[in-house]
Amino acid sequence: MTIKSLLIFIVMAFAFNICEAQTNPFPCKDTLSTDDPYYVCNCEYEPVCGCDGKTYRNPKLALYAYHVNYYENGPCLGADFDIQPTLFAYDLTLDLYVKSKAPVRIFISNLFGTVVYEQFLNSVDRFRINLQTESWQYGVYAITVVVFDGNLTKAEAQQTKKLVKTYTE
Image 1 (cartoon, rainbow, N blue to C red):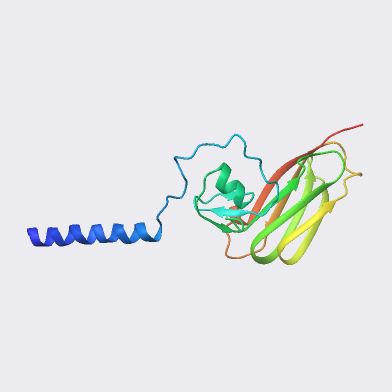
Image 2 (cartoon, helix red, strand yellow):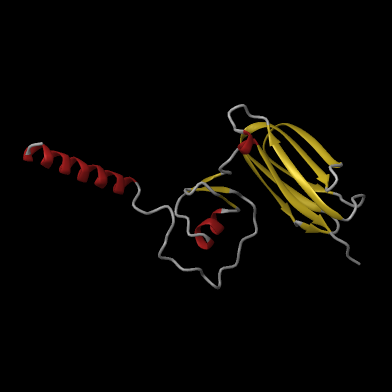
């Protein structure tokens, strides 16, 4: 390799780094920021996909609690959902976000596999429902959301989270 070709290679590599730095001036996460002890979490559920490939509850939480500089609206995978509260005695609220409109099946089953709630939604991108749980027994439940989209892997198309019905007086 001659000195001239080596010099051209170095200049091209430097120019590429300058272009990349101009399109993305900040890293994905701010590693120099510290946690804010006075930050109060905004509990609104509006999921965003962080530049690190993780879904965060909302933009403020991604930015202030996890120091994510870049994100896109919506979940990273095919769908994401939130249940409030996860420890409940009476009713609970389910918020569902689907990355792109698709048919969705929601079902909730108890620890023994008995389905206590099931619903099929034809084509949704956002869905909210308040569930009445008076007839449910106390115990652990699993809620599963399946998105019927041929472009998703099984891991992206199906998510399961747990919730607990507890006794209160």
